[in-house]
Image (cartoon, rainbow, N blue to C red):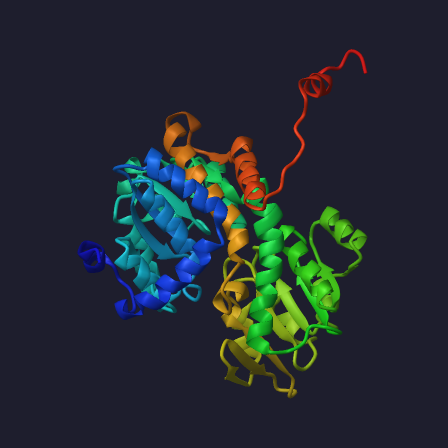
Length: 422
């Protein structure tokens, strides 16, 4: 065990390390793309002598990413990006591997914030963020550490929105790669990862059937597409709510009913919010819902389902099953909130499958390497992931599956690049 990491870290229980280690080994055995990158990093040492701070949902796949970056020569510190998605056994296992961990499952809000601040105070050179909290703290409470940061990579839609708002106001002071906007992130992680893991979380938590029920999916971005697709596959009747007219047409063309939430609230059995915005479901909707309606959120922050409105309207509140809170109204109707309105796939499940996070975290690792190599020329802005990194991850994935694809001949390349004669 690395004594220094143990002394620096703030975790729940180091005795859980063996259980966490087994989880990480299982995940890594199903992450061939990241394994290949690790082999490269061990030889190349792209982060030698650098400090890397990570804030992600702290479970087994994330832990393996941290170990891959550590294998590339970095001194790694990690914290959780959501208080209910942190797994204490994973934290303990990472500490025994020499990684400093500032994370616990379900800390109170003040302690959770302090754990993020502790992570920043390690004075990182590079950052991997999920939701933008590390970057936000650096630009507000710990501006004295800004000058050391070369840049980083952002994992999720909400974080990129925050970063772009900072850039627009001229507040962003180092480059951040928008990993969420890369092809190998949103096409697979957002769609297939979210689609499966949301229903893993709902099914495991409720032990109820989805077939025949009306499932209302709020938001038809890539995550919403995945959730709706999997709900349909489980036999549910799917309704989509949207504020984007183009996405609404797309949902309609995909065979789903489209209507406003005010209308959908009256017929839904299970609600899943996937928008990144606040008050998607709130007081005016609770008045309309059927007795027994189930409310879940798959957006990054716990603001999409308005919990305060629930608490204000309810005459009683109790926990009826792990991760299920029942709110009963004065007319006798009850609705059920899963995982306190936090990310249901992580707060009430294990997150995306390992094979999906394999591609996402491969992109994270390669993006961090790219930032470190080019930060002086990238500027203080949100930067798209270079296509060659996306393509490399896809090729590694195909290779791991034993799949070969065609290659363009020189003549074909010339033909596609010409315009004069066809």
